[in-house]
Image (cartoon, rainbow, N blue to C red; front, side, top):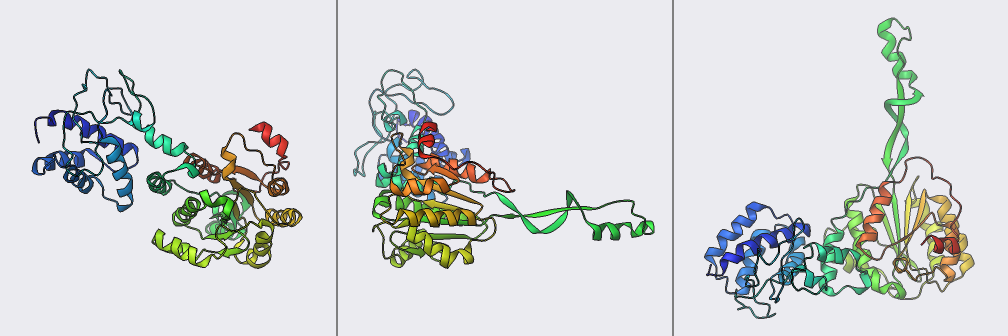
Amino acid sequence: MNASSGHLLPNLLLFGRLLRALGLDVNPGRMMDLAQALAYVDIGRKSDFHNTARTLLVHDKDDLPLFDMAFNLFWRRYQESVFSHQFSVVSEATFPKSASGLDSSEGDETGSIGDGDVRPISDIAGEKAGGTTAVPVYSYREQLRHKDFSQLTPEEVTAVKTLITQIAWNLGQRPARRWQPGRGVQLDLRRSLRHNLRYGGEMLAWSRRQPKQKARPLIILADISGSMEAYSRLLLHFTYALSASLTQTVATFVFATRLTCITRQLRQRSLERALNDVSQEVADWSGGTRIGEALKTFNFVWSRRVLRRGAIVLLISDGWDRGDPDLLRREIGRLQRSCHRLIWLNPLLGSPRYEPLTRGMQAALPHIDDFLPVHNLVSLEELAQHLQQLTAGKRPYHPPPQPAAFIRRQ
């Protein structure tokens, strides 16, 4: 290391904290290995520094795109800035403006460690740095969590895909038909008789039983029409991650003008291969929208195969429909009566100015159990919490939502 490395080591610690805040498995031991390895590489070359840090700090190939983005955003020259991190605020008295960082010239593989400042995360979040303004290092991740999927750059899409895979999914359970020993209210006569044989047949102790619990089946119906083009790719990645994380079978369908089952394609271990198979299987990608006809095909062709007892149905669509609204009203009502819970996920619901006034939404709203947004990472995290909190018993009755009342609640 050169003379400027006196400020490089504190910057390395801040960089490690940033990586941990983004979800990467970076521990102090790996940071020590990186600090020792930098003595044997030419840290005056940006590519050498990047490759060394990438090799020692990343141990999961899925984290590579997120690491590259964090590296390029953190190690950048930025004048008159200060450092801040998640747990405390570090002012210019601790890290003066002459702190060293990597050159910000993009595409310059010989960028050296000079006298410029490391660019803080406040610049990433779009805030003006100056004086001792401080912003947490996790602000970039928070920005990604709240940013609408339709507004993401290609680099941000890669980072969001990684964050989607980190969401924990756990569906509510339902009582099965089989029984197991427990503290239920129902007597288990067979076990009671067997247990009391030791007392000469006198019924001195009673055994009880309770229903076994099984995970609820999940059905996903995703709209891939032209009006959903800005969201369909990321939402397919969401369905893939959801299918991979759950133990029960997840039946997935996509529709525009007709319904297509893609459950088998999403069982691929490679996400890219799965999406390629889906694109080859689906013939009406980014076409028109006929939700009623797609639901009719599901109800009459697929429901007896995949709509098992107590299933949860996720219907992902913006509600723009060119079909018959009476057909949509009839078929979505039939679907709602056949499942435990029907949840409509609408990406347009994330906008504060959205009103469900389209013909499709007007026809569907009276038959929907839950009407939720699905436009960013926060909405997906809230959906995961909602699915986990579903009760194991019968679906509680609630009056059907009316559009005007729904708008007032928002």
